[in-house]
Length: 600
Image 1 (cartoon, rainbow, N blue to C red):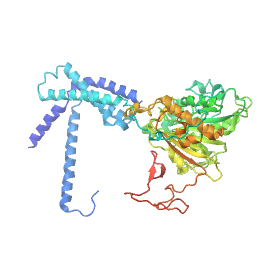
Image 2: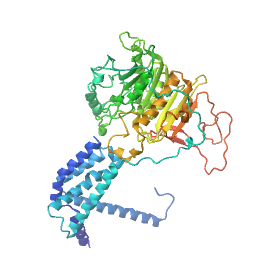
Image 3: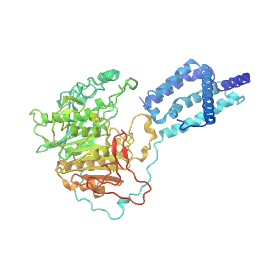
Image 4: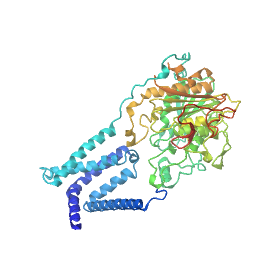
């Protein structure tokens, strides 16, 4: 009996085991194939008291299943014993490359491994056997099995390649019910995204010693000193930290204050100041260049706009994941760096040798942040009123700037929590933009910050949000574009449904321009735009938008946030009653970073 079983498995192993000459021959081209793909895309319980009969059945089932798994493992080992060492090296190298060091495995898993290793190996093996005359004519079980594997692998490989590179299909037409029926009157105001009458000037400032970028080395108009973030940034260490030092030429004790600036050349008075900051992206694919379209608009309209370079605290090719990875919880430093830039601007305005001497209105400051930068502007607004860094009082603060507007583009929330608390802003004019097709920030995280902002009785302002259909994460930054991520993982998304980049930039310019004009230049007539986008439909692409708006002087009757008792409203004696519901409950919503959003 056992001899028959042994002979059977011997036949199975004989059929399943490829020829050594075939595997040896295809090892080199297969290795080249694996390296090519990875270079392109990664570099691309029981309860109660059950009867003893059931216990026996369950035990037998699990023992049997375990035995079967053990036999299959023995079979796999027997097959592996017959595989040449050269081929095994390529096999395990490819496996490690895809599943240990590749972000793409998180998105496609075994499908990607099949596409770059298993199917190509079988196809190359089939071609080799064909050329050697070991495939045709199709006689014998082994040749038939080899041919079927070759054919199925070729078909499967082509199908996977098609779906992998298919960009998707255009978005289906959707009826915008809010644009039917009687519409509100359009605002009879100038387009807040239109260029103004000022001639636009441009320059850069920074360390003057940047080893990777000429504009922050020899190309600076004037130099700025470095700043020491070592008391706040604790993850710049280990091998990854040393590699980061080697690439950038400095460590956390000497972070540069680099920025590119657009300004009105012919301004006859001091200009309001706006700082813009990018989020996390590959550090070597510099992100600060992507807001030039906003910088030029602002400068032509009488603002000084600076796009701040914080690429050196972004994810980097120097991050060694299995040795600890890159920087963590660095967003507090992102916000602090903005305030250090503002300190520099305070000095620029007082320095007679600086081109911005007496030309900066530090009484009117706006902050704009994108992605992690969107959270960072909230940290900056919070730190601005503190005397110490919440996680280390040895780091003292003395800022106290007049920040009039805080604007976040698709921000994260909770990546860094000072003293393990989500930032609680008070008396801030806040606006957030979020795309419905964001493939990076899949939660509307900015609305969590929106919900946390509180107002005192004497503050006159508002908070608002805009949720935009067909907008992604990256097209708000021209250097990021349509792909909200790097590597092959982006291919799981439908990219063809996105709006054109120019439309997304237009929406950003309209709303960001209006928000700054309203809060910095006191042009209150733009406020209805933040209550209902339809009053500005003449300026906006014809898309679906959802507005959120809450003025500081509003009295909330019920927002489901006060307690766990369903019948109570807010602290005003009100009661809540319902009728006809199949379920009535309140639940805390969570964002992608597991931050509390709100009750619903």
